[in-house]
Length: 475
View 1 (tube, rainbow, N blue to C red):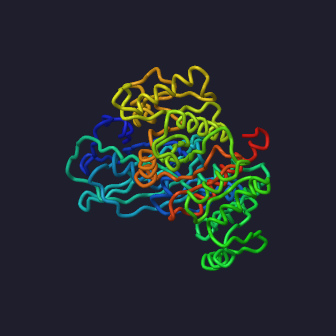
View 2: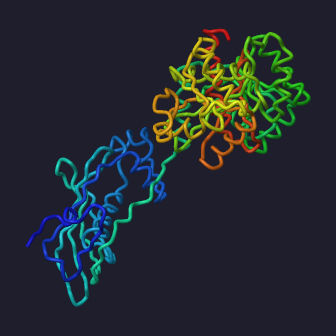
View 3: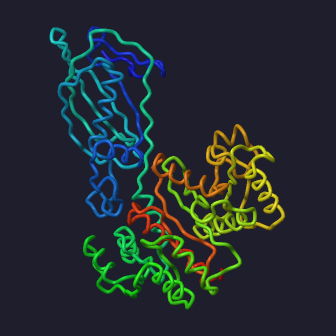
């Protein structure tokens, strides 16, 4: 005798099992689920199965399946979900499962999992269930028989909701960023004092990706030693000798002023050495002040987030903040954000005479309103939560064009920006790249000795895009 699907009988917020005595031959339960890319990524993360057939589009396209497919055991996990939550439900003990895989499952396929009671042995508490998984076309993709020990005690309790999984794939984000550098010729880049493995590897990887043509500037023996220890090949890479970091910075600045390089990449030298060299060459100056812009890929934020200035301006004046905002908006537009949204951060949203950053924020908004700062939308003062949280924006600033969707965070001072940047990296798992704007050439600058080659590689993408923009529009 067959009954209605068991899962349709349970209240949505309650979970209830079917005991051994209640089970009937022919009784069924169903689950419907549509496969998404996130399902595949989550299954790979939990299982460790990173077979490229599931995760690499190019590999999958060239395979016999001609496209990405789900892990076979994802369907098996859906069967387990029905057995463990619906039929028989809580208290069920899996003993055995046979599976036959008939068809691949692709992103967008909607699967119907049906389990049906075949036999029951009351004295041994054993139950066999037929398990069939079909796709939206009715084609069988998976089938088998499960053998379980059925529960004997009734369970009915509030349903426990699955933990939330926040998927973040740094490599995928990096690939997406690298794609923004495709289709443009590599730019000659002076790599200043690359005597740190991360910087040197980053420069060489950027060269392999077609982002830059590196010109290594520094003490040749130290650079070669760094390459040897890191297993890097310098064959065919141009190297200009400079005895120490300050001399390397001075040489790089002159090369940039003469147009012999279109970008600079800071290696293992102090930022003040490179900045002093740049500032000592008038040909590299523009009407803007120099400022640093971090670019973060944050797992919990839907788009790249720029943060400025965490490196150069300890306590920026209103005039300096105006240039900091302009430089950040320029970078955002160059990287494809048509109308950057700038959140000017402060402790709270109220304009308070005792909080100077709130006064500066209001002044910057007024300057933008009068056209003194152009090229984006500016709002402030905004607390951090109001800048990046849609819920907070809805509660506190429903009319703001920036709140909850900021592209740029303009911090009140370097201390605040630096702490916020490190929190994004170390607590939120963000990946970072960085660029100094405001000079005649872009200057990549990552700020920690432990920064990996990926940080330098990502920064090279920014430098390439900016350098090509400067060919058309002189800064």
